[in-house]
Image 1 (cartoon, rainbow, N blue to C red):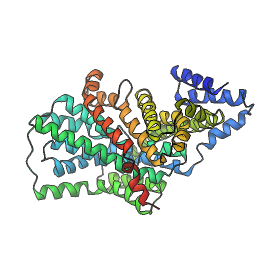
Image 2 (cartoon, rainbow, N blue to C red):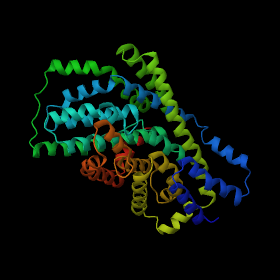
Image 3 (cartoon, helix red, strand yellow):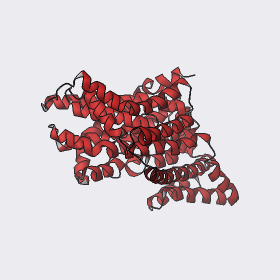
Image 4 (cartoon, rainbow, N blue to C red):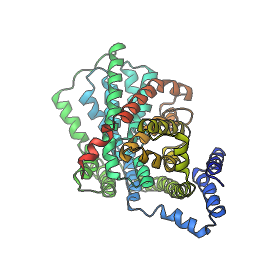
Amino acid sequence: MTATVFIISLLVVLATGIPIFIAMMLPSSFYLVKELSMQGYLIAQSYAGGLNKYTLLCVPFFTLAASIMGRGQIGPRLLKFAKNLVGHMYGGFALATIVTCVIIGAISGASVAGILIIGALVYKEMLDNGYDKRFSAGLITSTSAVGMLIPPSICFLIFAMNTNTSVTKLFLSGVGSGLTWGVVFAIYSYIHARVKKIPRTPRPTIKEILKSTKEAGWSLGLPLIIIGGMYSGKFSPTEAAAVSAGYALLVEMFVYKDLGVKDFMEMLADCSKTTATVYILLAAGQVLAYTMTLAKIPQLMSGLLGTTSPIAVLLVINLLFLIAGMFMGAGSAIVIIIPMVFSLAMNAGIDPIHLGNVVTTNLAIGMSTPPFGQNLFVTCKALKMDFAEVVRSTMPFILLSLLVLALVTFIPAISTYLPNLVK
């Protein structure tokens, strides 16, 4: 089985619609046994070895923290705080949505978290304050994807596991790209409000600002713990994940008193399912990456491209991940494509931290892109809208997202400035 036949067989198996991890394991196992005469137990060892990494403990802890926040009052309190902060400006409700999604992203690391936690609430308020349905739905759907960039990001974790890149530096790099995403969307929202003459809300009093800040104070502690702890060197990413989950549980159960023991047990069950899904995918990805290395897939990709120009390599990687993001989940796209292109990128002199940001930005765009963008389906359910209507509403924001991608791709400092400050 040549490298070309291996890639074709992988694509064919993926196209059958069977679970992704099985689709990755079948051609890999066949190649290792047929071509290299490898014993089956060695393949099983490689599969299990893919999970033998301390940093992977981040996944259940960050997932649990996001689940706790989604069940409690942290999200609505953050939205109220953001409205008092920027709601009186032109496009204030849109700006408040962006600010809240950035903060939620700094807690959850998930693309759909913003839609699930504040989507229905902010959608109604935007309609009541002069925004049309299409702009409101498109903003909520697309802005929520910033959760994949702002640390902690499960997408960055998966990239780190497949490339042996520093998780801490990837997280810090996401601050730059996440804020770039938020600023671009905020500028568009401001211009939209001025052009459409959407009325501004009254400026809140100092008393109202202080009150909302006090109510959201415990909630704002979560991103400060995660980012501040890692940046200062007090926490490793795994320790920050554990502290954030414990902090979120403490706040919701004993400060806000919105969750009980029964709720916590249900969240543990949901967290276990999500974590198992990620772990199975990562384990299969380790076997796939090992097989691709032995089959000399990276060398084949280099030969096909015929150049080591950083710009050309980045454009090819952007194209691959944009297309992949339309049809599969972010984790699946990383574990399938990264083994093929990582060596190519390193030979072209691309910083792995920069590459991780480019890849994750592409996949964040894919979350709101038809036909299978996950955010689209979540918005349909949360806002009770037709799929076609949601797709139409996201089109202007997809163009904005491509602008963000261009900035992240061609201005490496957006990704590397903060990580380079950390020794």
